Image 1: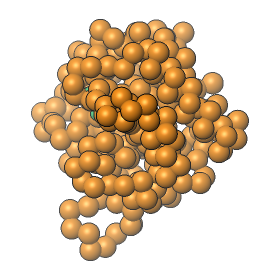
Image 2: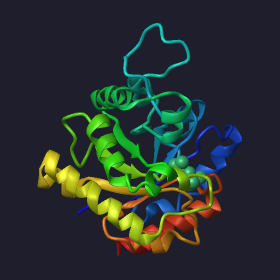
Image 3: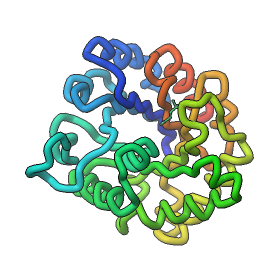
Length: 248
Ligand code: PGA
């Protein structure tokens, strides 16, 4: 049985005043679905443990444990201040910060060593989809960025079509279903049926209160990675509620 997961990715948004948005999730976080907020680094310590049922995560981590890497944060540091998850390989990290599959694989290993669960993001560009290369691209990203040793406990895979992130465009249920079935089959082939079937698969890309229920009805969708709509608790709560309803 895979516990559904509603994960909010705040990206570079939020100051201490935004912690009130985490507080507002208290009731929604008592349902069947797991609730996670990934705020910017400075908010992780004050957010962690603040609201029962709301887990806290980082948005990236460095592969090394410590050292002369100005500006970076290690997985152990995230765990030390109360994070239990880290998002890795988000398309914004891949594109703007030049993170490639081999970097992401190293970060993932470091996160697992520190005891963090990883939300590993994969996704195709619009041009890649138009050229009918979507599954090849995603299969390559999975092979390159997921290290050996994945389990249903330490790994969550998020499918985030790049053309749907922050654009208001969502993939159709058919498109999401095709990709999620493919991801699960790939996980089963590489890690065995037990791991493949127990790993949670999230959809991300313009998930909103208005489309959440339709997305959560797609087979092999175990939750969502939510950007913009996770910044306002009123919207995120409606998405969590839709996931709680889909868990019944
Ligand atoms: P969005 O972002 O929900 O604002 O499209 C999703 C993400 O980047 O994880």
